[in-house]
Length: 334
Image (cartoon, rainbow, N blue to C red):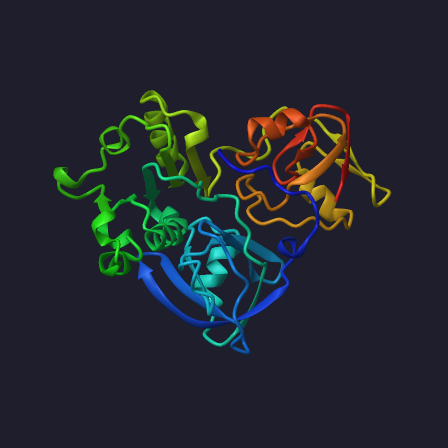
């Protein structure tokens, strides 16, 4: 996954320090609701970059990460799109079933782990399903800059395609290509044809289910795209968080003087929470980067899909929501 090195410092983006009001909600597609959040007093909201997301408290104690869908130039509201997950652990189900217009919601300030690179090369935006959400802000930003791009959006059926009317009416509509799995053959998504051979300044951005991303990235790599020009963002994990053969280990929170035993059947995040150690988290699947924690001693066993290989090689951070320890003792700071 191509992402910048995460910051381990505490700051405004690591807490739910904004309280916003739900101005509107409407169904965008089958299982997808669009939500517009505003400042209760009508104040201008903190700025954000294309590709940014918010941590959102969907229900008391349930925090999830959602991409911002509106143009970065629009500061009067934040727009997010939420897919109802059939296996929801309390996040998306709460949003779909309980959120009412007028209620207040706690969110973080915008944070960006999926930024657009500068340059004038070809830009490809590839979205699968709910992966369209960060691509909307990217497309708006690129269009405002006058940078050419192509946006390819694939869904299972037309009923599952969100924000389609917005895309059709956008000033960049000619750059948008929509593909449905059950559509006629001529509109099918042909990854090799769409991606093509890379130019020196080209960049590809992809967001969607794990299978979709694997297909896109494998195709791009087979066509000679270098890793530095490929960027992807997950919204679900591809593997189990706790696997057979896990061993217990000890975590020492150096800056709090706390020692926690992590059993074979729990995650480090669960053990830390049980001990009263406050760690910001969101997805619990190792994909969003919310819980990245500093490591000062020991060797983590990385199981996330967020950190880069360079991040992992330094052994100075890990994600307690899914990763474990290769050493009996791991010393961290939170």
